[in-house]
Image (cartoon, rainbow, N blue to C red; front, side):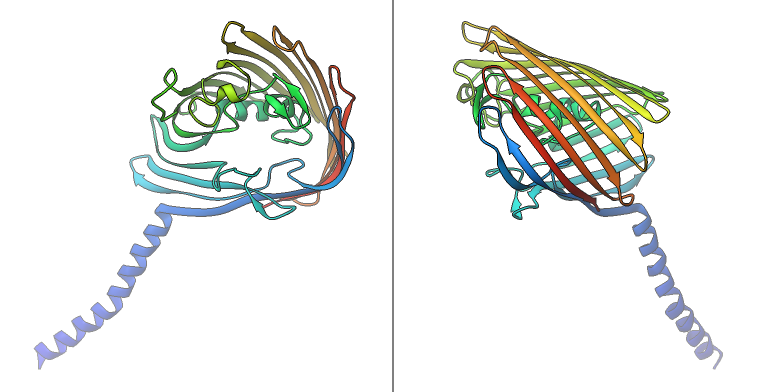
Length: 359
């Protein structure tokens, strides 16, 4: 009789304890790993006229930020180590099309996995280029392909784009595939990154891209320096399709910003050297700008000047002025006007208003 009562008691304890044990294990698993969905939806309406072309009224995607969605996560491995991943893709909110342009991969923004340790972070896969990230950080219009003088001059222009011939611009795009990156831990405001991308081609001169970046931040002051080398654009051996005889390109950029009271000031200098068979040429670009609080929102202004030497001998001047008004922490309204003067062509202009929502 005592044995039976003892067995019944043990069974009752097991019935109660087992769910508690599983609940505890589940809670620990949730605490040790996380996955998050996030992104930006940005659409604007206005008029756009490229240098030398007629004006077009339109609704566009990505006025201040290129629309994208993504999900990423991390898992605590113990001892200060974490497994991390991110999968992110651009899309065009005005039409619902995937990618930032036709032919863009589904996960063109980022698609990587890696390990974060006390000694630094290693990631493998498609990743935003270090030059692009720094160029965005040190200009008031950040990553805007529509209104940022810096981004427009650096990433929209090499070869024939979209209405005029130019040999100014950066190869390799804003993200590198087949890339390996190492980032140092934060050392009292000083951080460093290096990245190498495999061309995965047996022809050419190695088919590679590599970059190194160093940045420092202390209070309201920040500065960065980056170097990038590429001898392919999106596939091994394809530079010749942009400029006849183009062999490789190297880029160096120095940038700084300073935030003081209600204002923040930015500056960048970018030197681009193009290695063309029997004829090299370089491009100098200067950018300056700032933001200042006005009411609830802020005024943004930027100016960029580029001049190539030994190529087509072109000069480009681009200036933007805008106002960004926050409706909440995640949603803002904006209005921007940009003027774009390219040597030998009639002046280009872009003006629009838009809304941006983060999630």
